[in-house]
Image 1 (cartoon, rainbow, N blue to C red):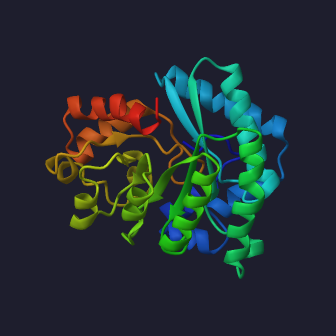
Image 2: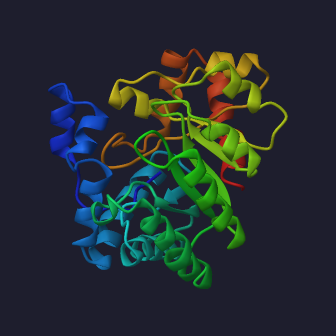
Length: 287
């Protein structure tokens, strides 16, 4: 999930109804950059107060453990602010919470022409601070055309590993560009999204420690393809399910809806979907 955020992106919901794509919204400063702007303008107390309401909601829906990613700061202070809120939630609630550092979620506007500069900021400024304060368990990267390349993803994963963070990566949402293979090479605990899977992507996951994770409600809200669950299971691979709860592409933390959607849209049996949500989900969170 990405439940520590400020405000909402209701306008983008309407934009999508009117025919704009995720990429088109992002290109005009919407999407992740829109959330980052709001987060950096909002106090830590207010972000905590909004996020705790979302956490209480998913707990009421039956969730017993949750991963929360940063990634809506895209500045040293913004990313640390999110991770501190996650730490605070973890202290104040009985649910198991794992924190993931996703500074590599998008390139902020200030670094649009200087991608290397932002990657240096992640590696040399953000990571040392996060490690020093023990603010994260995992490191994540949005490996996708128009976001972070495979080479950049590997560089960031390697730096995270140096600081004791295990990789989990966001791959194959819109394109298959080799991110899965990069994740496996660095022993990523999970590869998440997987809407677009080539036969070689499925083949690469065999006999690895990396858990494929599908996010059916993301496909539902964005009207994009669903993870090919039957092909993954036919290859004798395990599959986990998660919500991707965030303010833009998946504004829901309802795992009951995820399980039902996996059955209806991905043709998973109820038994497979429940296993994917529970046992395999726990594995994908390292718990």
